Image (cartoon, rainbow, N blue to C red; front, side, top):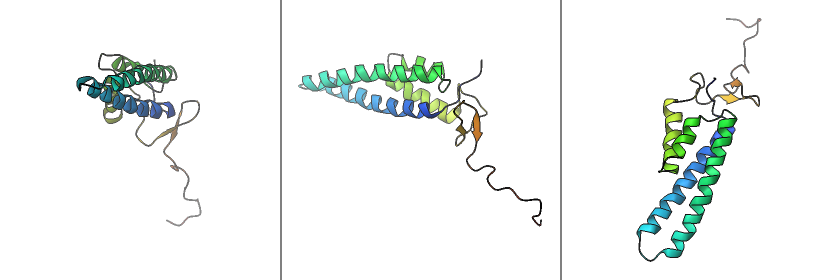
Length: 131
């Protein structure tokens, strides 16, 4: 089975993971501080719905081979969005669980094939060019 290659949906996974981590952090803050019952309820609902949305987006990205299933597993741990942010950091910095031939800055075509670096072959010397 071929390894996934991060694509456009992976960018949305990353953004949604950070938003969900912020909501989760505020939920923990309001839960720990006394007297913030309504804020705890609001951020609890926001975290619940956001976490389900994050898991669905990661699941779709896994199905499109734009994210590894280990990222979904990291997200479904008890720490939730913390696991997804750590998993994304491991993917981006160390290249874990993704195709090692893909480097930062490369693009994908709609069919998921590597399109190479932008403008990599835009300027080629002509045969008439003097050395």
